[in-house]
Image (cartoon, rainbow, N blue to C red; front, side, top):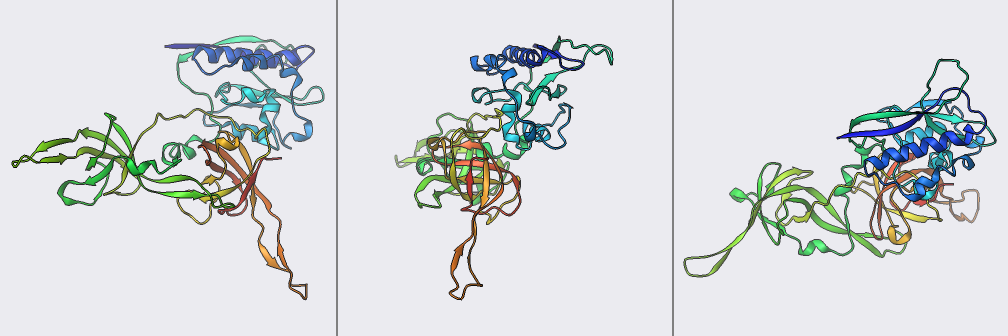
Length: 396
């Protein structure tokens, strides 16, 4: 299957009406390319081309060493590229001239594209293009380019996907303790009580004809750090298994019914599988790349816990948050992280007054998985260790 996409190619300085039209045609052409492979292109995205010329960011929002041009490379992320051009990378939709409805999937940016910064006028704008024509021609041309190749989703990701991919199926929150009634491991060959990759396990419960399963240990409640209300139940991921043969009920010699458990094979395990571990279906993997963006409304919450029960976390680790879809949280939200101020004593005061020091800005979070009342986020940047109870807000 062949994909053909049109991409504008530009050369020379911006001039006259092309200041508005270059970005218009670039986004329109990229949108047409996306439509060829059934990527989500909304009417709002198509209308973006008509708004580009009115968007942009003030020059003071640009990074001090923002390049004039940049060619997208394999392995780049939207976050990294935005950081090259902006002091505040989450403001990239303004630089690109895109509105909130357009930024759910950054599927318009591919390796090999040239990005260049238009500093004409009173605001900066980022354009997509490729130079054509002779060097130093001093002319500006917009020329479509046919891009042919296998249909693959080679658009850049929002953040390094390898950092969050393992957690898309492993970090799971149940509204109630649904695992209590799920199929469970009841035995293993040769009387073993612990099983590893490649070994068989025997299971009781309704497998529903499904082949692929995740294995979880007992759930633990996730409590709001402020109210202590239970917001959900986090299951401890153990590994994955695949169906081998169904269970049955057979009659014994004396006519009594006897249970024969189903059989599964351990495909992978983070820790050894044990008797009593529960099975949950493997959902379809969603690797859609939700673009980093600031919340549209004010957000204020706390970190519930560091994933994996650590006491503190650093960059590229995962934390759970006490806000979810019910609170307006979305995948792709960028949040400001604040270190909770310590309680201390004023040693210069004869009365030794107790003081609560103010919270201090500590880093940034990227929300990648959202449940009803809980979310998981990747620590993008951090200055000091992150701990349960630390606060997050919308970035300024």
